Length: 239
Length: 319
Image: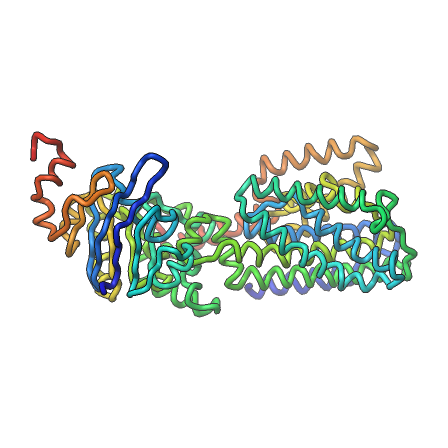
């Protein structure tokens, strides 16, 4: 069985089927990309995995264990961390305290949590801002803080939701480097991204979806050249 | 906590213990005892409302339960109401369990409304179940101790205990989790925080110490009725104003707020008669408009700004 597996997952909001019978599996150590036009259901997939929404149908397995019935905090506890596309910093806490809030998942002691948080803050290059309140941070740093906070919970699988959206090319490069570093430290990553340059560069495999359905799944080159993908993004004329 | 801060605390607490040696008049001591009771309630409310961000408009429920637990001991069984100082907080904390279970299904303003209703339900039940609670006639006890100084010291010790417990909770894992829940409940969930559990962990000590204040109130004032101790405007809402004036989510804010509230309401009552509530209301509006973090909150912010300025001189935060 795969490290992480999604089987026939469906999510309906009333009459709208946001995710339709979607299946894929992710191997340990992989960076797995998910792309699709606006409203194609990418973030909904994350919300289903992290159980922010209940599934309409389907099953999700993590390390052989079925997880689609667990509450959100349990999902994090068994080792699946996530970030939010619209960042949710703990505004009136400092950067370090934000990360500590994540680190407390694996320890009860303040000292241990602080130490762990210091390491993560340094790993993510946020040392300069550790005592700044999160509400005063600019967007690129807030995005990095999202990642740092999720990392502090000690995940084996990390769900990154558009961590490069709104960043300029230079800032994206820093973010890409950080994502690679996280993978190299042994964390498996599923990443949603709009910026093709980013996702083509770092993903081992990419899943393209539209209207909640799989269009294609494969190596970045294959996916980018797939006529259905081009059609979904650019329209019939270019396919 | 740095050494200057520690010294300041020691000096102020020592001063608080020395006060009755200087002020001996019963009226002045009475004012101070009322401040202590409100400070205990405010500190307790602050744990749930300030740190965990769950604004309760129904803390009168716990205050009244604490007071009535003590009063009914005497009324029905002739047991000294001092035992109520143990029973009252426990009753309030136990009652908090089902209340939390129900009300924490709601978020934000809906939670506030559910708590408001809870407080009113208790008031109405205690008025109408007259065979058990003696209804609106209330409960009158004959206090065994009448000297004010004793009550002052007892109140002071109880306040210090409440503040200490709050401080310990806030500076431990549950404290960080409570603030995380206040700042963003979804983010907190994504960090593996069982939010309902930690809201209850904030509620129970909060109810416990509010019940303690209630039991102390009964022993001190010696008369309670449901319209006094379960009052929406004079207890549930007033405790919120006290905390907002002093400083939400600060350790000493509620105590400062309680002092201002009692001093002002006594002063205005003496000078303005029944217009005192109006003046007090205007003052609360002004404080909320111009010092939205409360008095202690604003002082803390000024300190942070000063510290950051120093840091900037040393290193710089740009880039």
